[in-house]
Length: 492
Image (cartoon, rainbow, N blue to C red; front, top):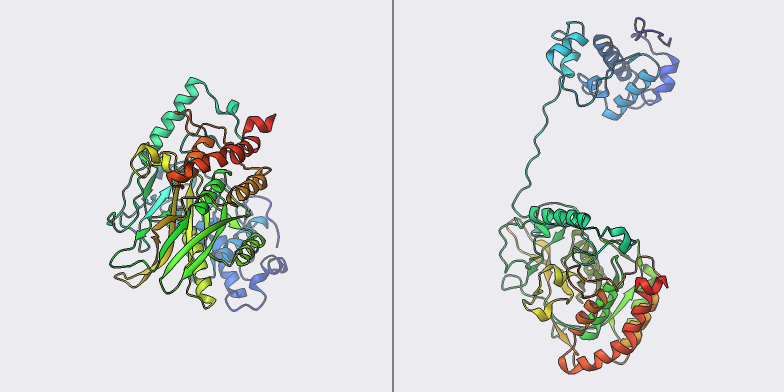
């Protein structure tokens, strides 16, 4: 194939024959494929050459070249022919590219095509397409329940900095602070609950002060509001959770800016359909971020071995939502469904419950917390959920249901709990994304994140056991946290 040297000779190619260079450059049409034949290549090539000759000197785009080519294979193959012809100098030699964003008028079209815009078929393809209007999202909830689209906020409610940012980097100037506050106000005012037809009895309340909005979507990080068990869908079992297990999960969630994960162990009474969660074992995570985490397989095996040695079984898992409420995401529901199917696949009928710990959950719900009173402020939000079948108009659906639980063993702090917490703190002391618990929980208040943690863990115990718990925290927990999870101490 002779390479043209000027616009006058551009496109000089024998339209009746195929050269060896073409066979090598577009080999996919010459290897005996049923849907890519030499005849189809000739048809594509000749069409592009004619289009180029008609539109010259305007650049022939791949989209324009595909117009008129029907039943000629996939668009990628046509695009490769276009690229080859362009590289070989058959088309688009010294072509004039149209600037992006410029609106083409009939006058400009006529000037560029020498007054032949009305008769040129390619000139019609250069007319700017009418932009499609984006459809507004549907307000009706999806089959799997209402979906909450969440905006990832910073560590403690909306006020704490992201990991790795020091106090000096945040810009404490009055102007900078005003700008940040205005941005937060605009973000909050733009998010609202638009929801669907679900009543408060059908789904868990999600009153996070405007942080989220209900919307349809398949984003795996979107939150799905849990339904509640009732007469239509009765709870398959009852759940009691030991206070020590909740306290350990709560501590684990506060130690990291990223998500944490672990297993809970206990026993299940099949006759009474009663699940008892007795302990929690934190596990190592793989690739953990502020919105996702994955359990290390070796760590999971170690936790299950620990349960077996104590005569327990793994009856659930837990993870944290460090930046948003304790509502399962699409990914969480998939993990929960996989765990439940794994238990069923092993021939067992034992339940497997998921727990979500949200350290800033109480603060996101306002001064009064989820309980509506000042004592609940600072208490982490801990949600238990499972996947259950629900009859729907178009068939049964597998949806997340909130699992109500009763806190047990609140009157006495077990002997091994403090030692387990000390091991947990020590194991996370050298991690990159460990939290700075010396920071203020919220900028508008003097309470630190450590003080918030102490309040939250204390809430799990009965009044008679709180003095014992306070003594254990003062002697064994607080000093260790101040040593490893305070930025100033680490700097020293």
